[in-house]
Amino acid sequence: MSSSSSSSSSSLPSTKLPVKPIPGDYGLHFFGPIRDRLAYFYNEGRDKFFANRIQKYQSTVFKTNMPPGPPIASCSHVICLLDAISFSVLFDASKVEKRDVLDGTFLPSLAYTGGHRVCAYLDPSEPKHTSLKSFFLSTLAARHHKFIPFFQICLSELFNELEAQISTKKEAYFNTLSDTMSFNYVFRLFCNKNPSETKIGSQGPKLVDKWLLFQLAPLGSLGLSPKILGYFEDILLRTFKFPFFLVKSDYKKLYDVFYEFGSSVLDEAENEFGIERDEACHNLIFLAGFNAYGGMKVLLPGLIKWVALAGQTLHQRLADEIRAVIKAEGGVTLSALNKMVLAKSVIYEYLRIDPPVPFQYGKTKVDLVVESHDVAFEIKKGEMIFGYQPFATKDPKIFVNPEEFVADRFVGEEGEKLLKYVYWSNERETEDSTADNKACAGKNLVVLLCRVLLVEFFLRYDTFQVEASTFMFAPSVTFKSLTKASSST
Image (cartoon, rainbow, N blue to C red; front, side, top):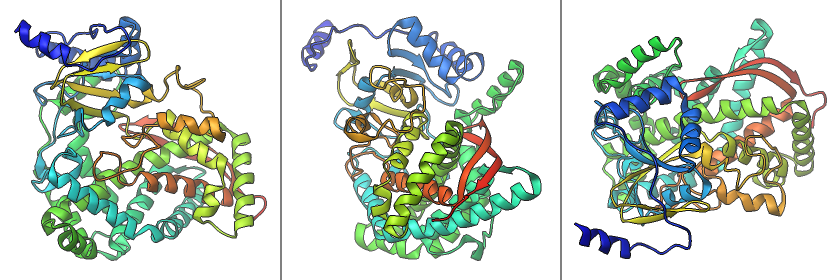
């Protein structure tokens, strides 16, 4: 035993930093994970849960348990990486395995994905990952000319409904409108069809929402008060996995419309990448429903929230830049978007301060030495490591005033150097998504859509006000006022 340990230690990479034991503990079997889960959801809350332990251990790397814990997850032990330096090891496919860790320490039933381990559950070392990720990248590349015009159509529909509701109700709940717009956009993009012209009609968002909820419910909370209701919720959400049969008929409707109207995409999967049609369809639904639509459910309300909270001065600056560039360029083009340095910085600042997917997991493939800013830690092969991104991307040793939304943080040469510490896409912002990594296949599209949303919004409006809160996994945003543009481009 000691000989093996000594051999393992001698083979570890060298470091110039002092190597310290990883602080923290997992507690007693079964009871430790329950203790941490209740603290995480109800007694402390998510951010305080991590902040309190950083303070307690005087370390941004420590041991703890992550939800859902027993009885759903057999092992909830993780090593947290909560600074910008240690967090980056999660991107190293040679050291960290991403097999079945999308949702952390538990895996929803594969019945939700037709019995297939879809691309999101695969490690890059698995052969199917290469073919599926290549298929995704090819599918998106073939539709790049549709990205902006399709989104402009969908945004126009959203803004018309937003104005109508504010006119009649004096307010408008943005999330529902955004969800409808997002599903319509994603379906049009992949299937070249308005979903209202298919048998699912306007039900697409509800069908996907239910499918998502039943998979992810053990990771969420309604934020119930008093605590006794929260504890009841905990028993309800985290005692059993929700069975697939509760959404089977809804998923079948999604499968049928994607199978029918996504035929050209599925043809490419079969003929160019050798993927069986049924497996390709389930992966397409996951890409469109979980990754794209599910991401936009969080992404777009979050962007609106942060820009609204930044206030009228920023609104005026954005409107001035956007309208001037569009006037000079003659329209909303990639060239025009690239000249809007403030708008671009605002998007990156939003993705830094409030990343839409805050959690990243991986299991170590080898014994590691992981460095933080001034200390190193040995992590053994087979350990689950976990990164809570909002702490890593608000690292005070990297970002000045990290808790503040600084609109022009990424403007200029010095600002652009900080992009390598923006991690929202499961990779550094400066790195591309490839078939060999786990970076979001649509990372460039996400940034593009956020920029187009800002552009179209401030071409149409001068300023706005919202009320914002959080519900389950996403910001909840209600428009309270909306001022139309005082002058047109």
